[in-house]
Length: 182
Image (cartoon, rainbow, N blue to C red; front, side, top):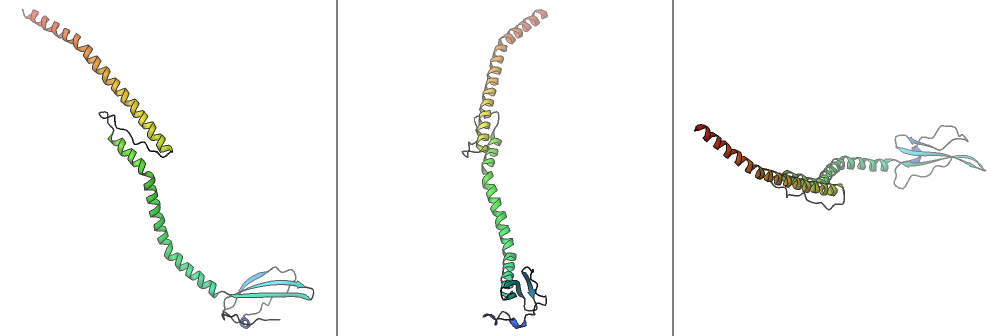
């Protein structure tokens, strides 16, 4: 059995690693285990050679890996809340920016009234459904303006046409009252 000397960084002592007590099997698959108080990861591999069957155990200290994982854990613990706040703020700003045209449409729609039908919604040049909606609403407002104008003209014409007969009826009623009094 051959044991290598200690690693250059003195991470562990190969002589202090407990030997694997399992019997050597020819059909064994590679096995990885963590050995002893030194936290050494050992990979056991079966080799078949013309001179015989061998078991090779390769080891590496886990201290440096655990130190890196510890630092990574601390970094995640510190940065996760910061990243969450950044993501929430970025999401809020992105949604606010995306909904700004909708806000402008709703503010303009609030200003519409039957007295001022010349107000139009801003035509957004975005090439999406919001642009099509603003164009459709502006077309609807134009049709509504024409309809209200036609109704106003009809009412003005009807009231003008009814004034003459009403004046005649009023005059007749006055004449009738005057004749009755006599």
